[in-house]
Each structure stands twice: as structure tokens, then as C-alpha cells.
Image (cartoon, rainbow, N blue to C red; front, top):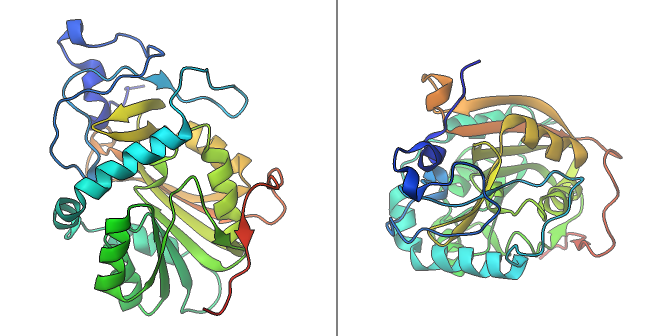
Length: 288
């Protein structure tokens, strides 16, 4: 079988072997190269080495030398705060209509639907859902993005980072996580997925699209990313109580090796997966 080499992972296969780890060395290192803006929707890896380690499976324990979740959150959000305007301009015309349609076609019931745009950024996709007649709520941890999204869309937008969620229970028909969940460290991913599971209505739908890879994890240009393959991503979602509805690679019309993004759609299964830990904050939606 031909090995798929994602464009996101080219540094691991480059010719300058003196700068590149031949294996996934369990060290953390951030390249200082390529300080230009690259969007969550088009996450690019620097042209030199990033020493990364494989994603931990749900059954393994993260080693003690990893950065803290607080460090990961603060540094990643600081990056987006600094480049918020450039990010907005760089992603304004990205076409994710295929992804929006993939979410909506699997939601049961009659529209309009209540949608959580998880990692809404400046609000581009909030506008798209609103134009289609749906009730869209945004969530982002970067204050500049939250301000932009509120101003540009008129939608409710919550300022919450992905590792400190406070979500309403059983409220959303769908969650749209477009190029956002790959920022969640693998050791926090089960908790975040279960919180999204709890925020969905019974039979609610979760859409995810992320840059894919061979399960590398680490820093790039001030941001943290995890590059799951399909098999690993399936394990995470199934363990969180979801069932797969479909998956595909983007952009369309190219050979698989040239499709760096993995999109997948999942349905909440009531009662599946382990119960939420009591420390997970799931609140009832109020009328405000």
C-alpha cells in the first residue's frame, strides 16, 4: 500500500537529514522558522525540523516532560491574538461549504437547527449558518476573534478556551468543529470530546475536520497541534460515545496523498462511552 505523506508532515521526509529526526523522538522543540500567518484551515508545518512524539492512545500515560495544558493553551491563544486580523483576511474566502453540508445532512428533525461553531475564529462560518436560516452560536478562546465574530455576525459568541469549556447540556443539534480540535492535546482530548457529546441533543451530530498525519503531536510556530490518522481518530471518537456517519479527505478532486485534511461526521449515541467525570462543567442553558 502506498504511504500517504501529508503536506503537513513534509519536514519529516525532507532531504536535510542533519536537521531532521529520522524517528518520532520524544522531545519537544519548536522551529523558529516561518513566522508568517498560516490559518487553522490551512495549517502548515515549518520547513525545518520539529521533533515530535506519537499521540498517546487512551490507554497510555503521558510522560512527565510534556508541557502543561495551561502552557499549551496560553501560548496557542497568544499566537491567534497576535495574528487575528491577518488570519481573518487569509481565511475570509475559504470554501468550506462541503463541510457545512456534511454536518447539516445528518441532523435529524426539522430546521432551523441550533449549531455550535466550535473554534469559530472571526465568524466566517457563523455567517454561513445564519444565511441558511439556522441558529448559530460561536465559541473561541481568542478574545480578538470573539470580538470580531460578535461584531461581524450579530451571533452569540462565547469566549472559552477548548480546555476550560462550560457548555449547555443537551442543547445543540450539531457541533461544527472545522480545523479546531487538532489543537487539543491528546491527553485532554477524551474530556473535550465527552463535553461536546454532552452538549449535543440525543442523536445530535458532530462534524470535525483536521489536518491529518501519522499521529504526531507538538509545537509549530507558537501553536500546538496533533495530526491524527483515520484509525486513531476513530478510536478517540468511538471511546467518547460517537458513531461514525461518514468521512472524506479534502480538498476534493485530488489523489489521496495530496489531500491533507480529514473530515468526519459523527452521531452522539446516548449512553455510550464512559460517564463524564464530575469535574466536567456542563450547565443548563438559560434564556439570556
